[in-house]
Every structure is written in C-alpha cells, then in structure tokens.
Length: 338
Image 1 (cartoon, rainbow, N blue to C red):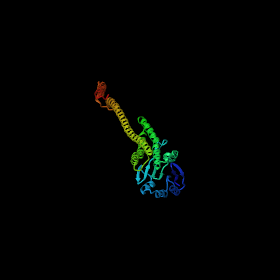
Image 2 (cartoon, rainbow, N blue to C red):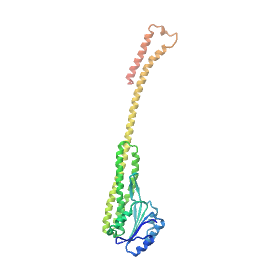
Image 3 (cartoon, rainbow, N blue to C red):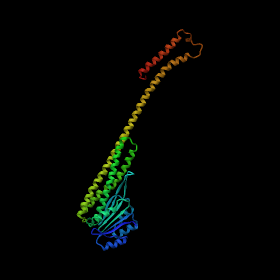
C-alpha cells in the first residue's frame, strides 16, 4: 500500500488515523475538519480513487500518474495543484539529486504524492502537529509548511554547489586537466537546480494574488511571504552560480590558449635555435669539404698528373686548401651562419 500516513484533523489536532482510503472518506464526512493523505508512488487505482472522491481534474491526475513534471502551480476551481522539485546534495558524488512531489490542496483535504525520497514530509507533519494553532488554519497551512520544507532543503544544496565552485576556482590555475569536465558537470547541475527553483517565485506570487479570492488567513499570508523571500534568495544564488561557472569556463579557455601559445613559442624558439645550429654545422662541413676535395683529387693513384712533378705542387695544394677554407669562412660569417 502506497498510503504512508493518513489522518483527519479537526481544530489542528489529529482525531483519526484511517487505515484505508475508503475509511478516510467516511471519517472525513463525519467530521468538520480536513484530511491529509500522504502517498508514495501510488498505483493508478489509488490515485483515481482519491481523484473521484475529491473531484480532481483529470489533467492534474494524469500529471500525477506520469510524474517527471516541471515545477508549476495550476488551479481548477477551488483546488490547487502544485508540482515541486525538492533537491538534496550528495557530497560523496558531488551531485544534486532531485525529487518530485505533487500536491492537491482543496477546501477539506491535502493530498501529497511523492515520487522520490525527498522531501521528508514526515518531518513536516510532526512539526505541524506540534503547532495545532497553525494546523487549525486548514489545508493552506499544510501547503505553507511543505513549501517551507522544500525551500529549506535547498539550503544545503546551495552550500554544496558553492563549495564545488570554490574548489573549481582553485583548480583553474593549477593546470588540472579535469577542471573543464568538472565545470561542465557542475553547470548541468546548476541548470537543473534553476529549473527546479526559478518557477517557485512565480508560483508564490500567484498564490499571493489569490489570497483575497480564496480567503487565506492573514497568518498564512505572512508565512508564505517569508517563504517567497527565501525562495528569491535561493534563485539569485542559482543565477550567480551559473554566471560564475560561465566566467570560470572563459578563464579556463583563456588559460589553455595561453599555455598553448607559450608552448608554441617555446617550440618556435627551440626550432630557431636548432636551425642556427644546423647552419653552423653545415658551414663548418662545407669549409672542411673543400680541402678534403683537393686532398682527395691529389690522393688518386694516377701516373700522369702534371702537378705531381711540379716543384711547387705541394705548397700550392696546401695554399689552395687553406684559401678555399678561409674564403668559405668569410662568406658564411657574413651570412651569420657562423
């Protein structure tokens, strides 16, 4: 059975805890209070039973059955349908886990349908039961308490995301190759967080506009305005996180380009230095090649070489080798090869 907790409240106090939905309907008709039905991943039959009893609109019922809805507020006559996306930060995995809870708020009932572990509505129920004066204000008081719990649970998420961004800012200047992947991953988390929180501002303002029409108690109005203030701060932090990550990505790209330019410049300088060395080696090789060529010619074993019988042949060959080497040295020196 997906019925987690089920109670009938009169004047802010629990007067009955029905075991089944049918019993809930009977007890509610016999008492002038309201029912708070908490369900966790109910079956279609269970949801349609409640829908038939409280005349829920079929479109909101379909949304509740399907799940995976965006945060929103819809009104069908005197029944409000809300989808909230609570979140919790999982520090070990550095990620945000999002839940989903659907609320049906009517004149004499509150129906909560959770599709994930968060938020912890048992905590909300205990807190409200400890404050009968507030709970006596009716289903709108339960709506306030759930909204307050969801927004409060965003606090640790904001702190976790802020800590991750601080770590990324430290990583940027260490040359860590994993920082870009971490920025992209965290950016996705922040975008999902914004999708969950940003619609809340419009939802809360819409609730405020209906205060007079639906005769909401003044005390509930004050509490809902306080929740709106907290929501706005959470949304502003989410916007700031996204901007910081965008700037971090820009800085990271700049640093990567700078490192690449430095490496290219270093390679260019190395290449130039190698070219200079090649020039020097080539120049000295050419200088040594000229005497070697002359020596090689006169070292051949031919009988009829006129210079072999010439008295000044040896000094001439030596002078020619020295002269050619010196001449090449002068030429290469002028060309800055040596």
